[in-house]
Image 1 (cartoon, rainbow, N blue to C red):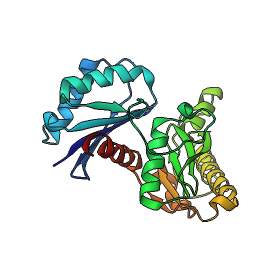
Image 2 (cartoon, one colour):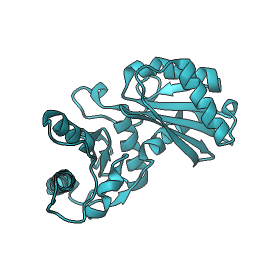
Image 3 (tube, one colour):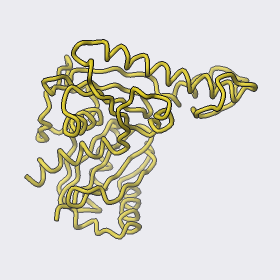
Amino acid sequence: MSNILCIDVGNTQIVFGLYQDNQLTCHWRLSSSSHATSDELSWQLNGMFTQFNHDPKAMDGIMIASVVPHLDGVLREACVQTCACPTAFICDPDVKTGMAVDYKNPREVGADRIANAIAARESYGSPVIVLDCGTATTFDLINKQGHYAGGLIIPGMDIALTALCQRAAKLPEVSVTATETLIGRDTISSMQAGSYWAAVDGLSGIIKRLHALDAYRDAPIIATGGLAERIYDDMPDITTLEPHLTLNGLHILAQRHFIS
């Protein structure tokens, strides 16, 4: 039996996924606190293993994608304290992803985006397009040759709305959510309708532009990220919703790195 812990460190949350014999058996989220210590993270990690009735010492390896560099050291130490097994980050030179990156500087591509691309290519072939709706909204394009070809980065839906509230003193804080009507009849419903449909139509417009390119005309759109579920029902251009795409990509890499 193989036991792999996959960890996706984002700007807002740290997502953990435990895979046993290629199946995601449980997952949980912690806040990406900038002040967390290795002892605190180890305590939280132990608590999650206990809650799900798993032995942290039974792990065969840990694969991590991180876009928060100042958490990398404390997270690595927490994993050593808790699991006592090999730990690897996608950005480490010894982790071979098996995916060519056509960025001018490949090191600029976020580790989570590489994990998404690997998982999407594995499940859907290439070309394929990943739409990740999180703190930032990103498109990742994998070309016919299976290379990471580039993408787009957009302010996340909640980030854009938060910025509006901060710059306009009389506007209340609200979150992006689907609305029953297009036209709001008060400030809150007007903000929600505007932000929601701007996000839906803006992303749909980008997808149409990408599908107009010969290289991506028939490319499936794979949506993931914490906010993707909010817009999925109103975006028929999305082929499928994959909530655990990043974790799945990390698991694929972990199998090659630790098990093979």
